[in-house]
Length: 390
Ligand code: APR
Ligand code: PHB
Image (tube, rainbow, N blue to C red; front, top):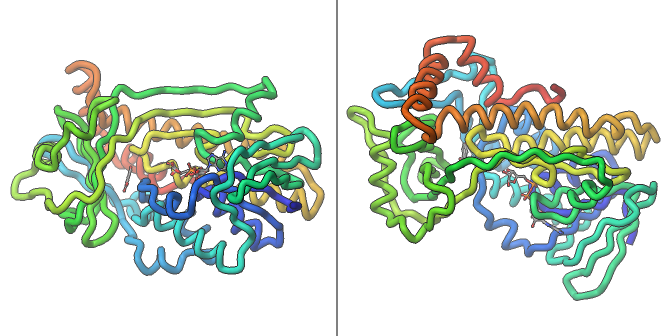
């Protein structure tokens, strides 16, 4: 098999990259080791920065997003006795959209399978080879068990944290990784309950953080700070609702309960690996970096990476200019560290750990954001998404 860009992984990063390159006349083949049903069933986050919405819409995969997505003008920041609103258009002229990553992935897959480039599910044993040459290839076994070789001009490693690509980049020996694991996790639920809030609520509480998000006017998505390694079996639906009610407590207001349709515990960590390139193998998305979900950056950072990578690959393959691919890793990492800092900042400010002195520092930081316009603007600018090139 032969193509111009072999893409490993049909998560949002790989699928958007394939779409952006397709629209520029660049051939791609996407290799995914899971089934379509599995990929489309994964529950993930749901906040899109303005530039992500613009990129998806410009790429012709924004119709359902525009129809079913919810544009949000801000967030509520809460601590005992206070629930303050950050008005994003006022603070930085931008908004965000609530639209599940699962829905974005479904839209991208539907578009790809409707006359788009090849998307092979249920492949296995994927191995990028000869990435230091100008004609790398991907060896893999297809869904029928036949060994295949995909000849390429370039390979995109968008195969997530546990994928096959990053180890190949790191094996060049010039790499570095930075990691921070947080001493807490999130218990997340999906519930058939109309959200009792107009904007997302990020709540600091002595018993731990809580986040009130949503998926639609009839589906709520809520999160509770729990201990890392917490067993979901220890959490009855009643216990979950009790804890949410307490952490969001505010005079004359209460959480809307309903049937919990999904619950899981999510680990919290920050991870950055550099470089994001080795020869003709380029990493993007979770394959190169992980952020804790508190800053709503994971999906948006993956989209920012592939927007830069698509531009660089078009320039290399159509204009034979390597300047953008040569600077891709540094340019992408500049934004990765900015988003890694913001996600760490939000996580450290809002999660209970440490002693009472730490608690007072967190509350002082929260009050500062609520009372100071420059501090609120700094949060709003980062949350809604900084320009693509930092
Ligand atoms: N071969 C083929 N496919 C693979 C392999 C492999 N060896 N390993 C993993 N994959 C597939 C996974 O099954 C998954 O579908 O690669 C895809 C990677 O997708 P994601 O993990 O969603 O990563 P990415 O596309 O970078 O999206 C990042 O996902 O985890 C969230 O918060 C994160 O929102 C961010 C987004
Ligand atoms: C979500 O809706 O799942 C969500 C929203 C904001 C976050 C994290 C997750 O910061």
